[in-house]
Image (spheres, rainbow, N blue to C red):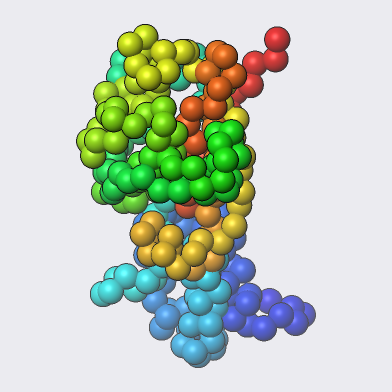
Length: 256
C-alpha cells in the first residue's frame, strides 16, 4: 500500500469489500478477528474497528454476539414476473411469491397482520380512481422466507366494491384476492389484464428497518402495483416494501 494516501481504515474496508463483492468471502463467512487484522495491516484495533464500521454502514457486514463480524447472509428470492407464469400460478391457487420461493428450495410464509377499513391514502385513491378519503379495505401482510422477514405488503380495495366479501376476513384467500376478482360470481367478475408498477428506492423508516430487520446502509424498494381488469377498472393497489439486499426482480415484457 506504499504511496496510497487514503486513511488506513478506509484501505482496510476497501480490501475487505473487494473480497466480499468478488465472492472470496461468501455470505455468512466469519471475517478475521480484529487482532488478526491489526497484525495484518500493522495498525491498532481502533483503526480496524473504523474500517469494519464502514462495511456495517454499507450493509455488507453484521456483528453477531459471540461470533464477531460476519459477511451479511443474503437469502435472495428472484421474483420472475410474466403474464404466463402469473396465470399458471393463479390457476393452482398458489401465490407467485410462494411459488417462486418454493421453486428455489426456500420455505415461504405469509402472515396477515391486520384487516381494517381506512380512509384511502391519496396515492391509493388516485390509482383506484376514488375521491380522497373514500373508505377502502386495507389488508396488511408480512412475507417471510426461512423465517426471515422479506416484504411488508399492504393491499387496498374499494370498500363499496369489496365490503362484506372475503377481502374483509382476517384469513388467507385461496389464490389471493385476484382469484376473488376473477370469480364469475364474485364482486367484480372480470379478468385481470394489466399490472402497472411504480418503483421508488429510498432509505427505510425506523419502523420499516425494525420490522424487516434491515441493517444500516441498506435501502428499501417500495413498489406500488395497480391491477386493472379487462374493462380498464383499477381494482387493487399493493404497496410493497422490500429490502434491497434480499430480492432480485426480473420483469419479462413481451412487445407485440
